[in-house]
Image: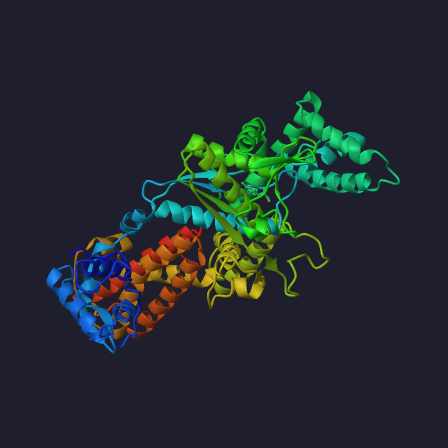
Length: 597
Ligand code: ARG
C-alpha cells in the first residue's frame, strides 16, 4: 500500500472497488466520504445507509459485510488505517501515527506534492483566457480580479498537470475604435512620447468623443461619421489601420507593466482583431447547420433547448452573431476563437475568466458551440466560465475614489505598498530602508491579491484597508509572517529546510499538537482538489489559514529545540513540511513568500 496523497479520496476509491465485488452492493453505491467526528476517526463513510435502504436490509449488517470484505481484500494496511463501525452503519477510518510519519517522509518537497496532484489534469490541453483586457483604457480596480483569479487558476491547473496555454484575448476590435478614431482626427491629436500619458489622453478622447457624437442636436451626423471610421478600419483603410495599431501598441505597453506587477505572463496574445478574417466561416457554418437565421439583416441564434435563451421566451434576447450592418461582434469573435483554440491548440478544455455580467454571453456561446460542433462533427472541448463578483466600497456600492471616480490600479498598488511600508517600518525599525521597501512591495501586492482571492469568487466582497493589511486573521501578511517565522526557526537552529527535508527519520508524531499539525498537513491535497474541481482558489486560502493556525498551536504547545535528537528531528520535520506547504500554497495564489519580514 502506497502512502496516499489524498487519503479521503483514496479510501473512497478503495471502498467503491471492494463494494463492486461484494454481495448486497449495487453499482449506484457511493461511500459518501466526509470528515469524521474526531473522537471516532478522521473520515467517515455514510453511504452504506442509503444502500441498505434501497435493498431493504439491515444497514449495520451490510456495513459489517463491507468492512469484512475490505479487511480481506488486503487493500488497507491495518497498521496504517484503523477501521471501525459506528451507530447504525457508519464506517470510520482513523489514520495511525505510523501513517502520518510515512506521509511526512513521502511528501518532503514541493515537487512531491506537485507530482501527486498531477493526476487530476495530466496530459490535458487547457486554454485559459485571461486577463483579456480591453484596449484604449487604463487598468483600474475593475481589472484586479481577472488578473488575480485568472493567475491563481492558471497556476492551480498547471500544478495539477494541465498543459496550459495562457491566452490573452485582448479587446482590440470593438466599436469604440470608431468614436476614438473620429475624435483623434477631429482634435488633431498628436500622440505623446510616454505610453502611459498617451493612454490617459486616449481615455479622455474616448469620453469627449462619445459625448460629442451622442449630442445629435448639436452635432448631427457625428455618430454616423464615427461609425464610418469603424467601417473604414474594418475594411483595411491604411490611415485608420495605422491609428488603430498605434492605440493597441500604447495600451499593451501600459497593461504589460501592470501584468508584471501581478506576475501575469500570457503565453499568447491573440486579441479580437486576430479573428477578423475567421468569422466568415462561423457565419457560413452556423447558417448551413440551420443554427443561425437572418433577422432584419442580422444573423441570430436562438437556443430553444434552454428556456432562458429560447425564442418562445418573450423576455429572452437571441445570440446575435453578426450585426445588422454586417459587422462582426463579441459573439462572432468568440465563436471563431473557440474553433481556433480547438483546431490550433487542440484544446481539451477552455476556461474563460470574466466578471459575472457576462454569464449570459457565455451560456449562449457554449450552447451555440455545442450545436455547431455536433453538426460539423468537431470535437467539443469542455467549456468552463469562471465568473466573479464585484469589489465593493464601504457603502456597499462598487469601489470608487472618494470623489466617486475610477480607482486606477497603479494608484491602488502604490497606496498598498505605502501602507505596508509604514507597518513594516514600525515593526522592524532596525532593517535598512531598502530592505523595508522591498518587503513592503511584496506585502502590498500580496495583500491586495489575497483579499481578492480569499472569498468565494462568485460573490461580491467589501474592500477595507484594515482587513487587507492586518497581521492577524486570514490575510496575506499573516501567512507571509508564518512562513518567515518558520524560516527563522531554521536559522536559529543552525540548519536548513533542505537538510531537514532530506532525512528519512520515521519517528511517529505523538503529542496532540504534533498529531493535529501532521493531519492538517495532509489536508493540502483535498484543498488543491476542491480548488481545481471548482476552479475556486479560496479553498487554498482557507486551508492555508487553518494550517498556519495549527502550526501556531503546535509551536506554542511543543518546544522544537529539545535535547532529545529524535524528538527534535520530528518537530523540525513538521516545521519544514509546514513551511513547504505554506510556500507552495502561496505560490499557487501568485504570492512569492519572503525569507524574513
Ligand atoms: N475583453 C473582455 C472584457 O473586458 C473580456 C474577454 C473575455 N474573453 C472572451 N473570450 N470573451 O470584457
